Length: 467
Image 1 (cartoon, rainbow, N blue to C red):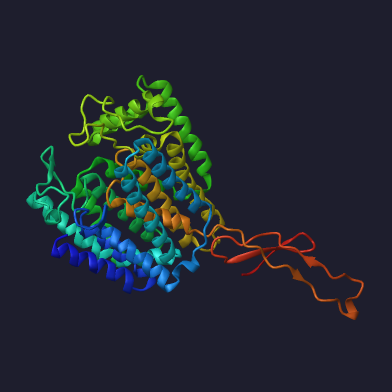
Image 2: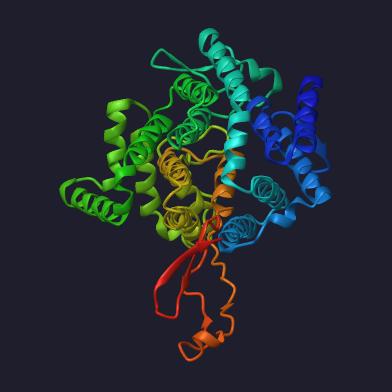
């Protein structure tokens, strides 16, 4: 680790340790934005990148200050843990080497610590809005550095290693990647934060800082010149524009399903080759991604049981480093790493994200449209992310941002809170005989943030009472 890399790593860890709870995640976001994975502190066979050091600082902080007490473990948390453990266990057993075990332990370290730290530090929608607002200077600085890379074709983060000094160029366009392993994940970072800032703006936080963050995030996505994040951003905007149709999401889902079925009947090639058609319009490697899915389906018998480590015959061309196929699809990667079980669990994680967001949206108080719009905006960000998953896997520090989103969903309060049993006082002499003491059982529940309660009266009417 270079002196500059060590300084930035310790600075990020200090931010996590010292800032107020809702602002502490800034240290993690800073580590993602400004230090490559080439900066490592080696402890035996384990390599601690800047992100891992910041995550460790986060766990120390959470345990030392007792900030985990506010976290309630729920079913979504179980699904995330089950997915991560299944992928690691199946992959390790299949390969059967110490190196693979160490690699998977490192992956579990990243997943569990990132998810835990974000879940414990960011406990409400207000916390997420606050950290997004405070992250604006970081996003602006990253956008400036990527602009410099685009202008000079030299990546300033090359001093940290793990990224090439010369920028990628395709079709005469410089593809800035910043500290990320690929321009695609750099563009995905810009897309994610652009949609999150659009969500806060849509929800009513129409401040100058929000607009600056939105503009800087868009510039990061633009300077990456990657079609996957661009198409994902378009999907996210379309989802955001469907806000007036939020009460008809079931019909929208059925409509999309019927449209895909119609395409299956009309198209000569499998429906996933629509990715190749989209690439003809906006550029990019759409045919590679469509052919990857085709090969994934055709080689089902080789990966369904426990994944596979041999994909060299999937393509006529292979990665120079490993000699295997370039897996640029998160769903395919889940199947290749964890077999059919791993793929199913990954799909369950994605589906449960939308289900929990939908449940929270339905149960939010009708008079708080700000909360509803924020939930809808985050859901639109997930739509865009799923779209990007068809073009890349989050194989670098972008993985931390993915678990930043998952922690938001995991922290949604969708539990049913029973209303205490109410009992009427004994009737007075003047009303004796008119009615008898009645136990009032709770007919409704408090959901979301608990803004109102529904109580069943003896006459079976529903009364709204303050929480």
